[in-house]
Length: 362
Image (cartoon, rainbow, N blue to C red):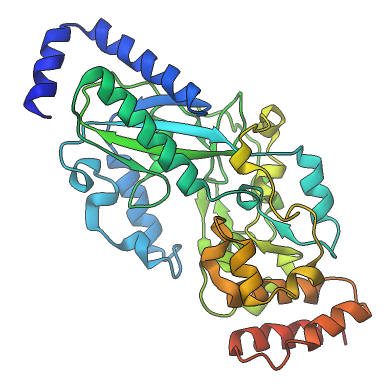
């Protein structure tokens, strides 16, 4: 903590004043569009032990970054020296009723894209708002040490959210809030502010196993444990090579991510629809045909996906994912024609997925 900041808090003189500051931070967060703002301590010893077990079992697959950075991921003070508290935020992103997502999933001619990726890249949205929040805190409290994160560094954001009372970790490994469900993004401000930490909430999953039962690839191998190597989100976003044949039929029409576990969660009946303009659907991605998406050239893909989280997977991965979905759709002249148009693609990865898809229509 800086000497100026230390002097400021010595002047403040009471826990009551610090609590008032936290309430003011919550108000600023709400003004910036955050559904809720809370404070966590930095004791993640239990999380560190669980993470090490998960890594030892190779459940992270090709996501090697999960094993990098040593203990910085679970010890915030090592990642950002001086950190003693983490201000956590969540922001709702669901922009349409869930029944519309289910309708797309049930139509094999349509492309299903995870609801979080329909609008602007959330990384940029939340980091920009967190930066503004930090500036407001500095204006009130003086110079402080801080760093903003949103799924962009070795940060155990779910654990920090849970510790700060944003919700509890569901059996699908997403954070659930009893008043907002789980359709929200998380963000963090690491800080040297000596704020009083909020208390965790209790777990309300009970005996429910809906998320485990619905998973198309049985990726939730135990309550609260996901084997990424079986997860459709991993295969359509993180995996660099060919999607294993054993999971292709189960992918159905999911070309980017998977929301099945959230769509069946009983707590999501309380989910709030987002009014955030940045999360509005772009290019009709919530209701668009697979064949149409498969015709996009690389330039079209890069242009239309500008500012979208989808852009980072690249055009080759995009087409490979769609090819698998076309292999799972109803046989038609337009589908066969689309697949044949790329059967001699320069990319071996695309050719392999296209050949598999064509074979499904024999």
